Length: 514
Image (cartoon, rainbow, N blue to C red; front, side, top):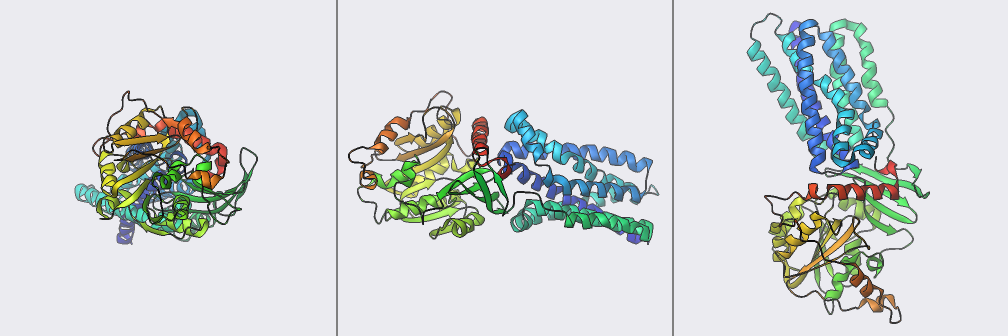
């Protein structure tokens, strides 16, 4: 029985190592749904994890010297499991921290509030196990090394399983539940070894974790947005790249990724119509008007979202190929937004560099939540896009930020270092954060005003007026070219991302975000 108990302690070390890494990855996803997937979120969760484990290591060493009993170890592990199971229900802490401290401070405080307590308790496990295995005071070094090696192997397994399989397959909330249940089962089994049938009472916790009701925010939920409009969550899932939700609000079906609206289409229409994007100052639809006849032209769209842009371009007779890094986005676009075009699940930068094809148009619209993937906003990325364009081809980049901000000035400077002609058009008047379309080409960018036939406005030209009114000349002060080696675009636009997220919350409500 002594050997069985010792072996179970090693099993405990491996499982706890796996659960700690699962909680760290899940914590980043949990925070990301409200704060985005920026470096600030990863810095927050990693810092809280390391500080919590450090405190736990010290506490575990102290407690194991004072009370070297396996029952105490397993009792601590039960408490840690209960806290992990509670994490998905603590989303309210994210909003409070966000409101008080903004993006960076809010992410750090939220991570500490939700995850520090269970991680401290998990930190006590390894020193406690080492103390129990070294009761006679001999072989401390080899036993300590063995415990940490086994725990680390468990961490590797937990990282790979959680990141590559569990989150995409089951979602964040269910993965928290599974990690908590695994820790609780190990603890309950350990208590049964110590106390026999009296320890069976500990089995109540893993059963309660498995049977607990799921938190709100799942398909079928209904609530009222701040503007009084009813909202229904039609679908909700976690992928390897973000939390995806499909909402219905005010006659529109919305695709929301990590709390940010990516696509909105009217539910009353059978599909998109020509001029739909232009009517909403969504100027990617200007691309067909940069040529005399768009029929038979080709376009590459990097970043599918709900598929509205490729669907609109197809109405002009343009052959469209789409690339999105997230296969779950492609599935969602097909299932809920009627997308039926060509799409492949691949990283956009990698595709640009290796496709070997050339297109008349290329669109980079790659936001994941409110994060612009930095490797698609560098001079190297825009050079790859230029190589993928035919002579005279036009690149369109969707950028969300403040037109007078330093981040946009850097993006504009970077595009301008690759293309001779660059034209930026905002989505609204003023300097607030907004959707900006940046056009770039080796030829002068001109529009043929063919939209007059689409709108039938009797001589009135609202599109040309909007273009002239919303043209942007970014400030050059502090601007520099972004490269793969140095690209702090996440930090430069951190406050702008905060304001964009606040706008989303006003639009669809906190329940879909927090």
